Image (tube, rainbow, N blue to C red; front, top):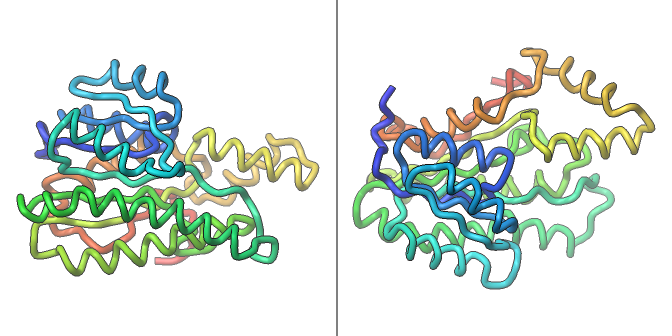
Length: 257
């Protein structure tokens, strides 16, 4: 299927690995000019070198001025931004009873406020051109809070509420705002979480992974490319009537409709 976005410009946050990289590659395969960004500058540039029309930018979005730096670099490289994919590193694992106000404030700052700045930098142009795609790489914890990931659950749920509210404001201006919720996708982040669980429960990591796969109706972890393809579709011309919603890419993991 031709997704109808060849020649569009996309900024993909935290795209030097995992789900962000998979999304950047899927968009580039559709002819989109992509800014690959992340704290690993050499990795960003290496990925960009493999993709036609791509640019690599080193930036730490959690650092002061990080969002502004990324916006300036992306606009210098591509001009107008038509597609903004919001993504960022997940907070440390912790239960709700273990986190305090300062932890929560940091999670909200990194998972909501920084992304709100990025949206604010590209949204006026999208509204003026009457075309734009805002997509957040979120988590199934938005719909079903994940045990021991309280900070992620809180921060990403705040972002979900913001994007849902924003989608109402811009739905008649050709701009969509959605979330894509991964389940257990085979990334370094998931390997890290499995490792933390194994250490906490004093189990072999292979046993933790097998248990995780058994809990998924598909009986396997997802592949990053599967997630990236779904993300690209939500950024496509064909997804113009999909907005204000959260789409799961989880192999049936979340047990609700």
